[in-house]
Image 1 (cartoon, rainbow, N blue to C red):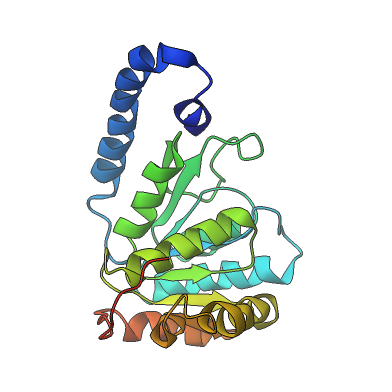
Image 2: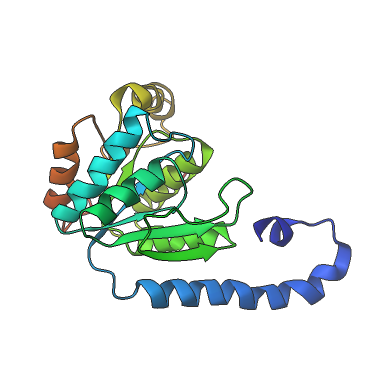
Length: 230
């Protein structure tokens, strides 16, 4: 797993173990590419595993999954509980492809019951490659460190033109407004990003708008810009 791969306390043992670990990493990429190769247009939905049934965002994620399928998209999530489960549930109940890309974690031991096509990963970086490679857009709902990690990795890849630009929608105005204000008031003010970088993010509470943004950007264009990494 990532912990063993990144651990430097094992002395020189890595010389003998890490080259073999590369084969495991390679197998995860091969499995991911092979399993998802026939996936049509898809949207990745991110959000907290801790916001379960009864939370307003769970209901919203379920409807977003349902509506994306009706708009002709497959739905990709991390395959876990909470927001991920809700989006998968909506997609599956609408008769669409409900994809779960799981990860071996202590609190996410298996894919949720609404995944119709699933893969389990050991390595975060292999899993995150699949999120980006097979998605035409991201819907980012309230979440913690994992959600923020996925959000900013996607933004960095678009900013530096490592991937074709695609829409990134933040769902939940009250949750995300503080982050956008901080990016504008601190990060942009210190010239650590360009004004156009803030345009990569779209904020809404409207499910209709989420679907329309994805439809409008089905063939996205990269804005004219001078990339600035970090």
